[in-house]
Length: 104
Image 1 (cartoon, rainbow, N blue to C red):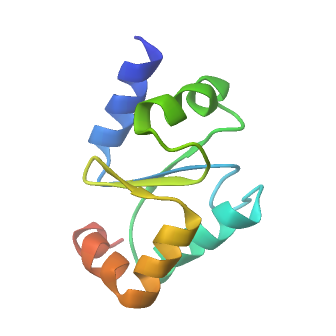
Image 2 (cartoon, rainbow, N blue to C red):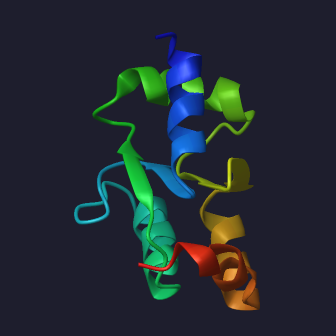
């Protein structure tokens, strides 16, 4: 399977996905850590992909999403954004509303 098809499959197979550096239990950068904390604070169930362990994803996801940095959060197949956007959405309550159907 082509890497772009693999990325699309992950994005479309999970309601909420975070492409991050590290894992939710052991984030490898502060931006990934803060983004995971916001998702957890919403009570959202989410899938993660460690782009450090998946170099094909790390190299090609920015081309797929047209977003250059990590983490990247997708909800219902659409890119929401990175750390700053997700934190802003959390503070405004938008993230809670968007992830409401994905509660753990």
